[in-house]
Structures are given as C-alpha cells and as structure tokens.
Amino acid sequence: MKTIQFREAICEAMSEEMRRDDSIYLMGEEVAEYNGAYKASKGMLDEFGAKRVIDTPIAELGFAGVAVGSAMNGLRPIVEYMTFNFSLVGIDQIINNAAKIRQMSGGQFNCPIVFRGPTGSAGQLGATHSQAFENWFANTPGLKVIVPSNPYDAKGLLKAAIRDDDPVIFMESEQMYGDKMEVPEGEYIIPIGVADIKREGTDVTIVSFGKIIKEAYKAADELAKENISVEIIDLRTVRPMDHAAIIASVKKTNRLIILEESWPFASISTEITYRVQDEAFDYLDAPIKRITTSDTPAPYSPVLFEKWLPSSQNVIDAVKEVMYI
Image 1 (cartoon, rainbow, N blue to C red):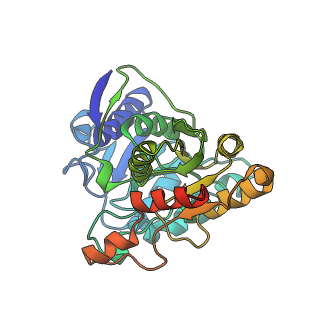
Image 2 (tube, rainbow, N blue to C red; image 1 turned 60 degrees about the horizontal axis):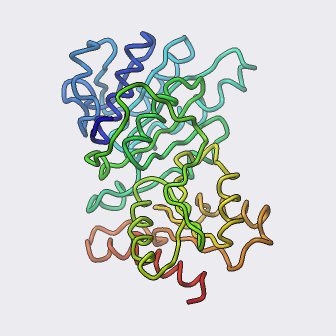
C-alpha cells in the first residue's frame, strides 16, 4: 500500500489506462502545459505528448463535441471540466448526443467518454461556481454518474469508468484533491454501481456520497459517545444506484437519513426516499429524513455559507429526531 492524494489517484488512474490503451486521450482546459487546474494531470503531457494530452480553448461545447465525434469513431476521450459549473455550456453534447447516440443509432455507435471535474461548493466561490449537478445528469438515461468520496474509491472507479463503453459523468471536489489515503500498489478496479458500507451500525442508516459524507463521519463519532450506533453507506455511484444495499441496511436499522450537497427539490435523496418507502415501508420506525443545502443559490458571505451547507450538527440533530431522543 502507498499513501497518495486524491489528485494523484486521479492522475494514476488516467495514466495507467492510457499506458494500457492507445485510444485513450485527455483533453480540457489547462490539462497539459499547466498540469491541470488542480494538478490532477501532473506529468502526463511529458509522458504521453501533445497528441494525447490536449489543452483546449475555453469552449466547453466545442471540445465536448469533439470528444463525442472521436468516441463514435473509435477513440476513448477523457474530458476534464475545470468545474462542472462550466459543463452547462457543453451540456447539449453530453445529454443530446453522448447519452443518446447508442439508442438513436440502433447500437451502431457507442460513446465511451468520461466527463470529469469538480462538483459542488468549494468555499467562497459564489452562486455560479458552487452548484451540484449530480441529479441533473442522473436524470438522463444513457449516462452513468459517479461521485467518489476518497482517493481509493476515486482511482478504482475512474479506471472502471474509462473502460466503460458508455458515457460516464465522474464528479470530484476541489476540496478533496489534497485528501490523502492508502491505495494498493497494484492495479485494482471498483465496479460501477456498487455502494460501500463505510461504517457498520445498528441504530440508524445514513446514506451519502462525495465530500459531504465527511460530515456524517464527524456526526457518527460524536453520536458513538452517546452509544448511538450509525451505519454509513457511501453510494459512490448515483446512477446506477445500489438500491439493494440501502434497503438491506434500512431493514437492519429501521431508520434512514440521506445527506447530500444539493438543493432539496428533485434531488438524489428524493429518489432514495421514494424507493425505500416503496420497498421497505414496513421496516421504518420513523419518517425518512434528508439533509440538503438550503433551497437558495449558494451565498458568498462565509456566515451565510456556513448556514447554507449541511453540517455534522445537522446530522446529529436528524439522528436524534428519528430516534425520538
């Protein structure tokens, strides 16, 4: 095992796959000469050259379209957005072409692309740079959506995404790129669509994904001091979603809280809530609770931002509410 940063896990996954398959290339803003906006492609230009690590103009619609065309013709592009807020400029190519071309062509074309970059908030970046779009992309048949929360999962899932023959949305976080964790020295792949029980418990289930899951860990540590046992499930993939893992946990703990860094309306937590009440209603001893950001654009003020973003205290309060204590 070795300890590496999240950004290094991303770089290793891309580099290992590019060594394995000459049809894979990386393109995006500042990925080459600058080594990536967050240094997630450090050293890749030197190793693979300018034909496979390509700096693009600030034209997301244009280079997303180039990626779709090249994927239809046998290549396997990795597209990096400096932030998924900028993917909105290219979302037509992602949703109307990449996600649909297999069906619209009757299976004659597939579109093996990974669209990756940071999602969600990263401090005082303002309303237009602090948005989470997991539920937007997950609402699109034909796309797979992955949101890892640590370096180990990120590397294994990114390698799986690059090998997948369908378009994959791979969402990271600016605030996780420096996170460190042990990963295996050798190759490993984590299958898409499989959740992971990060902490086993008996009293309440918390389902989360991405960087906000750290607030669940903090809350679980505090609640353990009061002999409250919390089970934490990291979805890792929000589409396809591992509903079976969630249902199995709810049947054990009889209580469910969903924690996500997104607006409440039509969120991932909304989908989970529906599925659990449909498949495990009789096992619930309390109403399902969800914890999201406030239903407003992200504020710039640090005082307001702290209130806007879910916290470990929000989780603690929700746990005690569903346990009636």
